[in-house]
Length: 280
Image 1 (cartoon, rainbow, N blue to C red):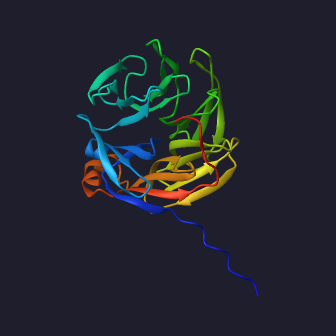
Image 2 (image 1 turned 180 degrees about the vertical axis):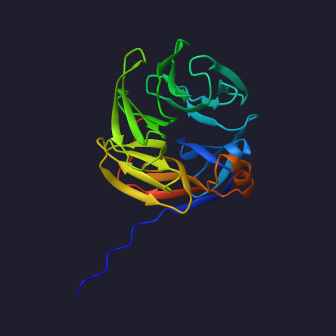
Image 3 (image 1 turned 90 degrees about the vertical axis):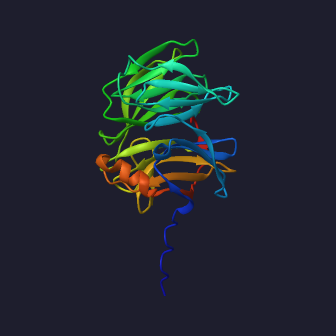
């Protein structure tokens, strides 16, 4: 007598009531993320207890990461500013981003050497520790999530409109070179991403309502399907094996205010096969 196959594991709900979540990061034993709709940065622990870590005076997009000294960086996308939270909680300008990419600043990732990469428009800009700001890549089809390998040698970026993950070699001076397709995703529309210890990438996908794990070359390793758009994902938790998924209903750009008011956003969790690696 044959047995039925076990059902695929499903993501569990950790938190509800998010207006519009993005940019999750595991930091100091909690998941931090931006709630664009509420103009807040939230921190939630593994049991679902959350607090407002920071309120910001600007609206979407704003994404976050940490400097190596532990200070929080916040991208104010529309204002074209990179802000830094000081020890006393105040927000100060860390860099004026106007110029290199020119519009639509979005994601940020800080590597293990302290280089700060920010994407916007169709390009990527790097801010070096010495304060030098310069564009290091362009011609990207809607740049979204970025992740950097543990050895600081490779940056992988989601090209949402290109339906692919693209890789660059990182030079000693922070420059990017040797652009190549890391994974062709077929019908996948990648948004936020993270890397695991098996050198696979997880990417979130809004229109297909899923998070997908792929390896270099495009081999599909695992898919987590949910009932709403997946905007970003991050590995964290006690053993760094919990995939945190930021998800929300998506009704189109013209209905962002409507979705924000409905607060359909959730934080979901899924136990992944391999722990987090790299940056962020």
